[in-house]
Amino acid sequence: MAFAGALFAAVIFGGNFVVGRHGVNAGLEPADIVAARYAMAGAIFAPMLLRHGIRELGGVGWGRGAVLAALIGAPYAYCLMLGLQMAPAVHGVVLHPGLTTVFGVLFSWISLGERLGRGAIVGIPTAFVGLILLAGKDFWNGGSLVWVGDLLFAVAAIWYGLFSVLMRRWQVPSALSVEIICVLSAIMWLPAYAVFGRPQHLLDVPLKEVAYQALYQGALANGLAVFLFAHAINTIGPSRTVIFASLVPLFGTLLAVALLGEELTALQGIGIAGVCVGLLMTIMTSHAT
View (cartoon, rainbow, N blue to C red):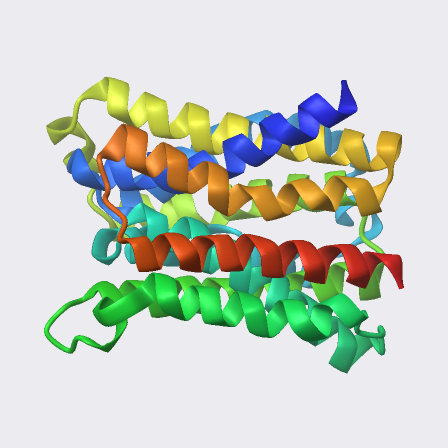
């Protein structure tokens, strides 16, 4: 069951970019999607965080909690959704997980002194070559905004890499970190969105699309998928569970092609394969050392 859960979580994470792109295509703005995401996630995780103790955020503290929420909370989600306004979902679902793994390993090596595995020395360059092949001419084409979206995916990956280092340095339990990030993001984003955003814009979009974004991103991606991965880590161990993370680009690509009708060139297909292989080599050896 743990293997099936980790596999399903990888599918959910891969589909997150597809769902976000679908929302953009339906007329939602990035700020709208982030608001829907954290309205749902905040409501789900607030009771759990209250049980841990809201005064000191379960011992993490408001200062550290705010840093974690700033790195992969609402600003991070907004950066990803803004990127999906400019670049295809396929770019996001490959570039972001790929660069997140690369930056996470590199930051851990630099900041925490963790040793790079032999596979990582080959896997990281392999993943980079695959990412370049995926981006293709769109990244270098000044007349297109695709390259801006790709850069936003890279920025979000850097933030996530920093988050992973701080999580290990501060020894924050994964479940507690999710509660803190979701609740603080709701507290910070929703009032600002109500004042400075365009909540009335939600009336111009079908209600089912708003509900779809809230349920998928707030409940599935932020809730169920995280729980399934955490359960797999506790059951079958981290070294086996992280293998499924390398499948996120593959599942996301298949979903983008099937549900959004996005097209891939043969060269981009080779690039995606290179990313998956590079991630697998990097993840396995980095956790084994």
